[in-house]
Image (cartoon, rainbow, N blue to C red; front, side, top):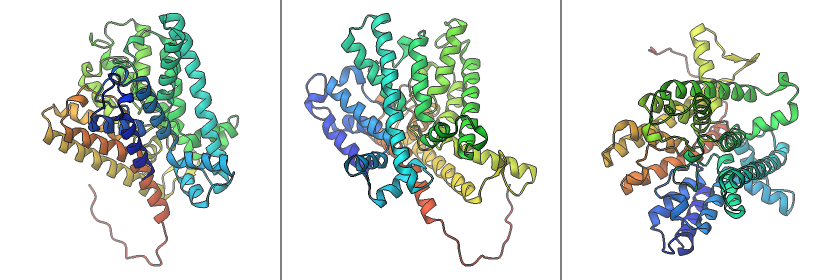
Length: 430
């Protein structure tokens, strides 16, 4: 409900004449779609953010994806700490689930970490981008500062919004722009529980939590796999990486791999990518980033837990294990449930868009996964979808941002031991 209220408030503000560059009121669907995309830190857009919206409208969008990246209950906890240093028990309980903190005593500490890490990272990245834009591209200090701040906040929150019509294509050869953006994306998307663990035990990896180890392992594998896939599939494509030098190819392939996992920025025309690269992005966008961060998707931890379960089954082991720890059966059930429901949402969304539009199936699938994974990458069909199609994407963005959190909460709170067990029987599988 809190996300819905933020979306409604954002829609109303974006419909004001002051929010639009030409001084006219924006259509409700345009304002609604933009508000949903911002609050759900997705980045899909039906209009060009830099030219359609005024500076006030862009500021509203930035505030919306900052709020969406924070998480509603994290923001509520921070507010409670500022007001009376003692947020209500109910708020602390819900925030405990949203931030994946270990106990009630950790909630305030994690919430403060969210605040400090968020603003520190955003300010530092904004300063770097501002200096680069002013010194290398000749922007005046005001324009450079606004562009640097907007893109820094958007990158950390994995929002994917840009005030440039071509996203970051104009900076495809500039490592001093792309590398800071990549750093912000990774820090924001790794998840605050991992950041908290690294802060407390950085020099003692043996005592990192299993969640931290699985998240870092999965993130590393996905980054390398995405980089290799993009480099292999696009190196000879003259419309994307083909015309670049080898260092530029490496830089842009790395950026694409980082951005594909829910950030949504692009340095090449995604509509011109090969279908092989699209297919690789399906997987990267669906998995997403770390739990309790600004990233979307079904989360890296979920995917790694399922892989460990499959490996244990193949080996004939009763338990799935990793780093000397046994993964609980409840984690298996929750991971499978998240995966199945996420897949069902994508299948349903794809069927609806195929019904209401005439675009090729591969482009529809890309758009649907991008919306559900709150990624924001697009093959260029978002603005041309009919209203029913755009509303379908808004539903997917909302479910992708809050659905998995709500689902995880309900699974954890509903978990209980039954006083009895039925006789066991083994149906045929496979």
